[in-house]
Image (cartoon, rainbow, N blue to C red):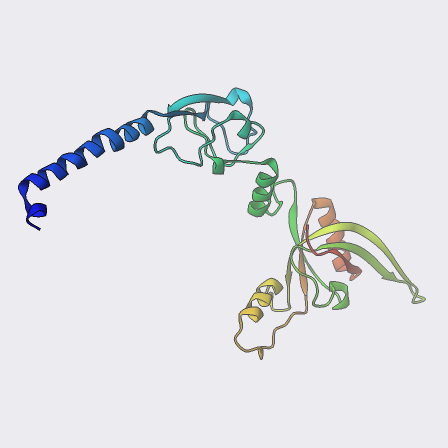
Length: 232
């Protein structure tokens, strides 16, 4: 025990540790700092939604130490991708800021609900429960719109007038979205609440011309829907 407490031993131990640090740890540390890699930078300001081309990008050699794993390291990863947000000249490109055309389209759809392409929303009241697909219809469904008419002799004529219409929302008589009622029922501790799942109103995403047709059918109580598919 006296040996381990002696100043000579402690001094030798410190020298040994210093030697390990000097000849093993520090060289690796400085080597890591000296290593370089290539990253992709923007050569100009790129607005959000722009498809990246090779002329907008450049490769730069930078120190690899401490560099994020999410940085784009080759032009092939970025060319043909879409700027998910504004990019500025000289900055590194990060993987989460350049996305595929398909992913950008999905994000845009989620933000705008498709209203940025000349579309509008129109709300209609169902003349009967059956015309609104009873309690089945939900937001996101794709439906075909039929015109249903009865003449003086009680002969009924039905024909498809608007195919593949997107349902933006479905409301009951109290203007409660049925999707929200689905969530409330699923989260309810007890299933004794009397939810009204009968659709009374439907909100369509449509063009102006389609809106005119839908409004006419509503006023004439000639509107009828069939479910084409449950989502897009």
